[in-house]
Structure formats: structure tokens, C-alpha cells
Length: 262
Image (cartoon, rainbow, N blue to C red; front, side, top):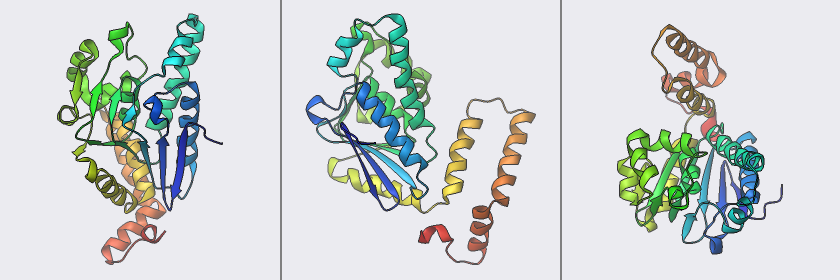
């Protein structure tokens, strides 16, 4: 697919997806949604890719919905709104369920739907000058489509405040409530992202993929016989896998597993 509003760069085993509309503060529309969906699907399916970084060019990471797109939506019927919102939901799910680990590289402000992009990624690193805002209620809307990912990232209690008040909050507050994992100065942003990338690419690709699925399977579930059985099966399956066997043997023999040389 040829991308018109974002860039997809492949560097060795790392895919970097860049929102690339700085003049529009990287606000998204139906085209951006389609391109993000395709970019994450392509990078997620590429066998040699070990990690995906989502970044943005310009002063803002993502300002939410593009104004021209919002003007068009204002005249949509309910059925058209459902179809339109469904595409956004599918894009967020594609990011959240990507089999490769994902990192949001947040270099600037994040508003409304942009919060969903950050929350859908596995990890987020933010510059200390970025502002965050769930601004929907100010214009009579709600952050419905992004809510499963934002709630998971910041928790119910923080969501009860910021969904309802639409207050802006700092990167430090985003870190305090768990929405982002690291806050750094602008000149340290890439070094911190690269630190996480290095950790991800040194791990077994199969084990990383299995960990992502493990979290999805276990999170929020009651600890009952069914869940315990599933976790038992999970460790048994990975122990019997090719990378599981190789990794344990490499550890015992004090040598490098093959994925470190890929």
C-alpha cells in the first residue's frame, strides 16, 4: 500500500510508523485511519520485524479528529456514524492486538482520539513538555471508541476525572496515573525508545508474542480452575516450542540463542 499521510520505515528488524501531517497537528481522518490499520497489519505480519514504534512529525503527536472530517461527520446519519466509528475501532484493535510489541514515541501534545493511539500501544515514552487531554465532552461528545484502551491504560479512577472534566494534564501526571511508562526530556526521547527497542529485540520473538497473548488472556479474569489450567498449558506449550527449548539450552550452556543473531 502507498501511504499518503504517514510514513512506514523498516530499519533491520524495527518498523517505524510516522504520523506525517505536522501542519494539521497529525489529526486523523478516514484516510489516516485506513493507512494506520494497513501499516500495523503489514508490520505485524512481517516475519523479520521484532518491534514497531509509532511516532509523529511536528510539534504535536496527535490532536484527535481532523476538522474537515468532523465537518463531514456532522451530517452523517446514525448508520453512517456507526460505520465510520467502526473503522476507528478496527484500527485501534489492530494496534492493540498486533502480534509484535509496540511503542508510542510521544514527542508532543496528545488530544482526544490521539489518546487512543497511545493507549493501544504496549508501551509509551513521552517528552516532559507534552500535554494530554480527553477533550470530547467539551464539544458534546464522549471518548467511546477509545475508552477500552484508555481505561486499561490509566484505570477507572483517573478516567472518572479526565473523561468528565476534559482537563489538560501534564506528562508527569500521565506517568503518575500509568498512562505512559517513561517521561524524558526531548533530547533523551530517542535514546529511551531505543533502550526499550533493544530490550524487545534481545528477547525471544515467540515468547514476546506469547506474553502479549498471555496478558490479554489473564487480565481481569477471576483466578479459577479454568484460568489456572490455561496458564499451565501456556507454560507447557512454550517450554515445548523450538524457541523455548533453544532458549533454555542457551541459558544453561551460557551461549547466545539464534534470535540474537538474526
